[in-house]
Length: 251
Image 1: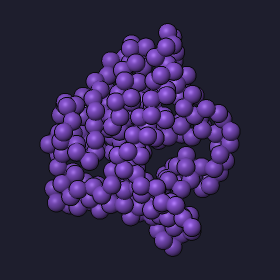
Image 2: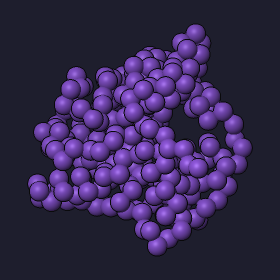
Image 3: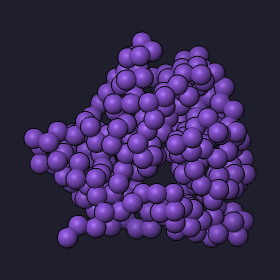
């Protein structure tokens, strides 16, 4: 038998508010001096070799830290192409800020203002705690992809907006999803997300990816909603498939 996981609000809160970001906040809120790497290493917990995937090497065994660094390299390479004349770097579904904080120390982004929207209160508190410890200012507020218009996060025009492994938790994106972003008048929007509709059923690996997303009740219509919104509003859309995945079934 196959047990399907229902990624409803209660399940997401349990996983991130309680078990992940909540535990990290509880531990580091009582630590006077810590680095961002201390929190990242605590989240990853060990450097045991685990299955992962890259488009260049296929399936391989790599450490969690190596995977994280490779993701950052790809994010930097991709986002930095849009830095000219941008005013801010914005991460939505930011978790505890591990990606946006690391990017902010890179040359391309050092002069950009930072904004983070996060679904969980614990994630927001942890971002603020890290911000204070690093002496690096960031504007933080709650953000829900299911109801993006309800956020109090004031994202300025001409921002670079990105998400990473966050959008796929939003079940059945609404057709007007793209309208929220259009009103922000961004410089660019980049989603580093697994897209069910882009997996090829003729490939064994990609067929397994589709099955994995179904079993975990992840979002199935990311591509079609964004593609429709871009065509409707005459926007440019560029897609790169299956670049990397620390989880080999979720590239």
